[in-house]
Length: 494
View 1 (tube, rainbow, N blue to C red):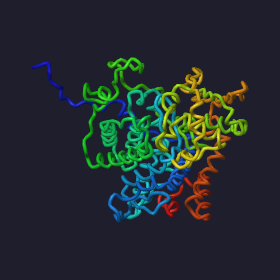
View 2 (cartoon, one colour):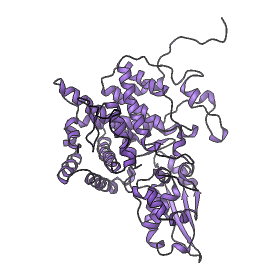
View 3 (cartoon, rainbow, N blue to C red):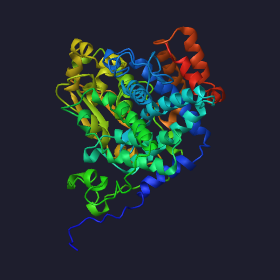
View 4 (cartoon, rainbow, N blue to C red):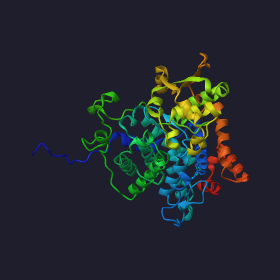
């Protein structure tokens, strides 16, 4: 026999795939902290979607692919009148949740936004409920949705703890596709074999490049990429439930598997593992850790590495607002990930470029004492040339302690500090904030802000009585958990 042949013996599913399937099937969510946080996450994510519906660049993507399509017993898109097939509904829900870069965040070796998975989860839950009711069965409840959210957060977040996809140029939305696929395949009645087959298909899809998140190509794709990923998860679940075979060795197959093809960039500057050892590593087993520790964006629609810089800038605003012409230098002390991901100079071409620029997100609250989504728009930027004047005076410095605390699983700090120096030799205090208001260490302070954010978002979309009804239900944990999904979605139709 020639040595240059492939061995055709079909392997067992990669252990990483088996572990995820066993987790979604067998794990019982018993952590009240996780369920409470999931409820808050549901409010926050939907609220981000309602705010996004004010922006035509977002809403142009929504609705059926064929205008006028009617889907009996389909899935609703909150804040609209659309009733769509569950794949497109997942796309739309995921798109509006992510559009303003205002939903929750997970930061580790990889980062991302686990609430992106709500697009697939909510669309499938509404679709299943409608189908069940049509044949006389019970709908799902919002407890089912909350538990699915905990599991999707956990899959995406635990995978991200030690495994950096961004360092090999891949976009974190591949983890949204992975988590959504696993969870919704179970929701749709999948067996262990079907769940593993669906997960393997998610890995075969590979990954989008990160280039649309970085200069010079930063653009609006980053606002709909997660909707695309969560909807793909729903589609892969459907394919697998129809009996499509899986690809058991998708990760580990020599030469053709994900590890060798997509996770094997050789570059000594990236400090990656040797190719023979380049497989995923895990800090912990799957449970409810990620949801319990998720980070909320409560005050600023801004990339999360800059959240504490924005807080510091708001504090400094009163001290510098009357001395703008006297500013000589602005020092931003930050962590390595912020420098690598969002520090940029030069022209910023569009809103997506600006909300991923550390210097822009610092300059605006220094100048105006706040940062809202409209501050990224072209009209605002062009009307305020002083923003770029301040950007050009900024120096970005890494603090090694900040970088270490960012990766410490017991801290997960996202520290930034700002100090402004004037031409006469004077300076402001150095304002340092290590944990943003959306951090678990600041939950007591943060949840009232989250609830107010949700109230405001509701008011931009619904009449006052409807706002009050939705808010009251969402803030009553027991009542929400027992509410049928179809009844909950009824409340979100305009």
